[in-house]
Amino acid sequence: MSTFLSDFELVRAAGAARHHSDPPEQPPLEVVSFPSITTQVVQQTRFSVPSSIPSLSETRKVATFTMANPQMHNLTTLIKRLEAATSRLEDIATFGTHSTDQSGTSSGVAGSTTTTSLITPSSPPTPVAAPPAPVAQQQVPESIKDFDEIINDQVKKFVALSDGIDTLVAEQSKGVERCFREQKRFLLIATKAKKPDPASNIFAELLARMQKEMMGVTELRENSRASPFYNHLSVVSEGIPAVAWVTVDDPSSFVGEMADAAQFFGDRVINQNKDKDKKQVEWVRSFYTILKTLRAYIRKHHIKALNWNPSGVSAQEAMAQVDASLSSLAPAAPSAPTLAGFSSGGAPPPPGPPGPPPMFDGADFTTPSSTPAPAGGINSVFAELNKGEAVTSGLRKVSKDEMTHKNPSLRAGSLVPSRSDSKGSTGSRGKSPAPPRPKPAHMKTKKPAKLELEGSKWIVENQENTTEPLVIEESQTEINQSVLLFKCKNITLRIGGKINALSLNKCEKTNVICDNLVSGIDIIGSDGFAIQVTGKVPTIQIDNCNGGTIYLGKESLGAEIFTSKTSAINVHVPEDENAKDEEMEYAECPVPEQLRHVVTTKGLESSIVEHMG
Image (cartoon, rainbow, N blue to C red; front, side, top):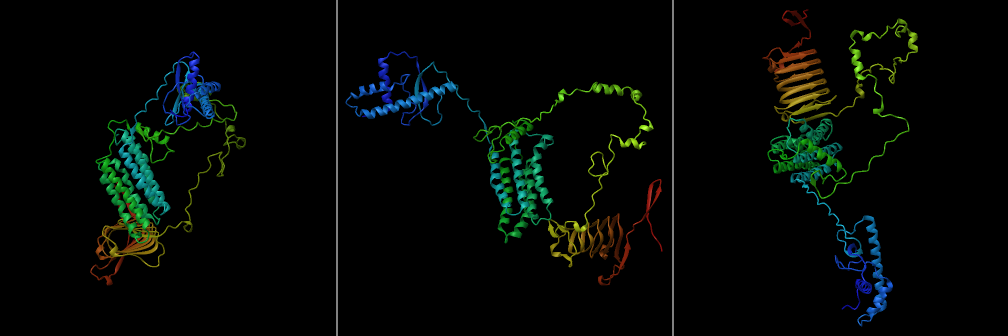
């Protein structure tokens, strides 16, 4: 037997002594759980003490009685321990009574908190209803988890690399991230919905948000042709249509085609920067990895086409559920959303506080329902219309003295304001605004000059007043390539080799020398041009041009020239097709400008007007 009794043994001894001396008059006892005082108490052990805690004098009597045992000693230490235990039990009893008054039920600490039991006299305890079992929630599908990995790993890495290259490139990369997040929303809807009709409005509505982000990425490239990072923008612009794989039957092959289109411009960026800036090379390969990972994802989860839920709800209902869940979880981290019908291990955040009450300035007002309706309503209107010619019987004729346009004195006091010529007048319609005047040439913003190959097109833009001829060497041209000149002025361009087509648009005083063309030449809205073809050209089209000269070689005899809205166009052709090139003499042939049309019963008969003299 231990030398000293524990605190609770002393209390139990005191309670037993009192219970032995006084007959039991208490009602049945019940066990109530309270937080433990010390972790040394045996957990979950129920023991009984009298309904009232023994007083200090009683416990001292018990202690004196107990000290008669030869095994008990050190009376002072024993009494101190007994007083401390009694004080703690009184505190527990006080706390338990307060908690019972507050809630009407026994309170306890959940989790790992150690509890003891205290018996209080009361009626038989009312059983507390157990908390409802959690509703079984569907886990996030594996396909959505894998798509999340693409966004969190590949797409975010691409966005981070874009921030250090250029502001336009960074802006476009954020559009790519938004596009992939909209596709994740679309895939979530597909896991919950039956497949809708591709020609239906609901299917178009499902694609609208994703299509908007995709078009934003593409338009950024189209609006930034003058940017030195145009090739970077083209890499993304050519590859982002890969997100449309959800609408095709062979999505894996479709993504592969988009990756090849992006690689055309991506290889340019790599070749230009492989020895200069390794970060740009890493940026290109990062975008390649996105498309490669997307293709692997499709092969794993959507081999032939996008998988829908055959036993799911309608697409419209699924879209409403997903959008409602996304909007309620907007403050949460985007990497782990908890959507309707899916569980990620946490409860949704509580709703925000209600908005402020409407403010009133104390003025009297009436609701629309309290506004009296006009007498008669629509029926009176129809009744007036049914009168026929008698509808004007209630009108009187206005005399000339009452006409404001014939009596200037009436206009001075008229309630209708006179028309104002000022632009800021709001009392009348005012004059229609004049069309904006074009800016003078010296005030227009000049875009940077350009001469480069984009795909199969040579782009020559905004070249002005060059001292030396611009040259595209024969070794640089191919038969499937074309040359486009746009807004060039006072330049000379030499094109070697055989190309497909040549086009001039809005050029002024531009000279072009070329060898052979497969298709032909188009000249639109250009003045003062001169074009020489040393080889062969089959057709030439001239539209809305003023002042131009075309020189054709002997191989181009028989070429067709189509003109419309042109003036002062001359064509120089060889006089002798057998003459040598260095001895070639040219004859000038003006293109007719004036036509004569004769009206007949069959229509118009047109002929060229010739001036003899």
